[in-house]
Amino acid sequence: ETGVTQSPTHLIKTRGQQVTLRCSSQSGHNTVSWYQQALGQGPQFIFQYYREEENGRGNFPPRFSGLQFPNYSSELNVNALELDDSALYLCASSLPAGDNSPLHFGNGTRLTVT
Amino acid sequence: GESVGLHLPTLSVQEGDNSIINCAYSNSASDYFIWYKQESGKGPQFIIDIRSNMDKRQGQRVTVLLNKTVKHLSLQIAATQPGDSAVYFCAENNNAGNMLTFGGGTRLMVKP
Image (cartoon, rainbow over all chains, first blue to last red; front, side, top):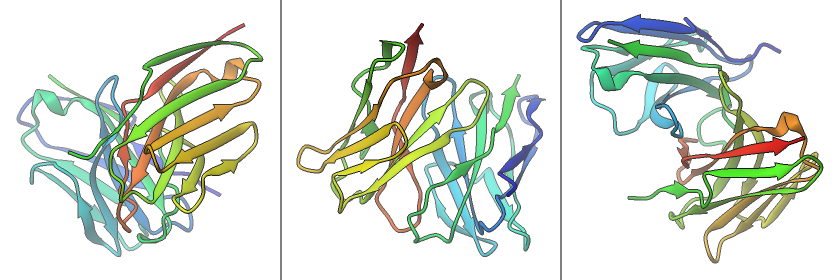
């Protein structure tokens, strides 16, 4: 069984640039969620994708957007990067939304905005 | 707003002792709770979960207790080992979409 994989592991961008982060879900999981984890804090929910559509969204601005592909993999896109976007971005996959099943996380992408 | 929080930011225990990590939640509508362990440089790792129709659930060396009356959740680790050293997060789900609200975390340090 393949777990959740994320790429790249680390990334450095300049303020104002755009970034795309990628995630492959655990086999058998069709729901993907993205979380932002600032240093020393718990993860904060960004959004969730199910059947290639956004299924829920946290308190993040529209410059945070995503995609889910037919193979359940997903991308997180952030436009007009700000310094405060520096964080660990976590992808998690799970069984279908509504099934209260545990999220399985990848090891994240560490984004630094300078 | 609704939030999940922890009482202690850091817990230091002796190897072999039992550890108890506590968590308070404020949303009485939450019906599913999860404990995660996060080691340095890694993503959160699922430990154990519990649904609101239960008050206790046991796993291997871990037990989760849920007190809905006072909205309190705890994680008990038996015979704590150096490999248990990590940051532990509780998380709650108050909707059917599996969108979790995490607490701020407790760092567990195990002394040999």
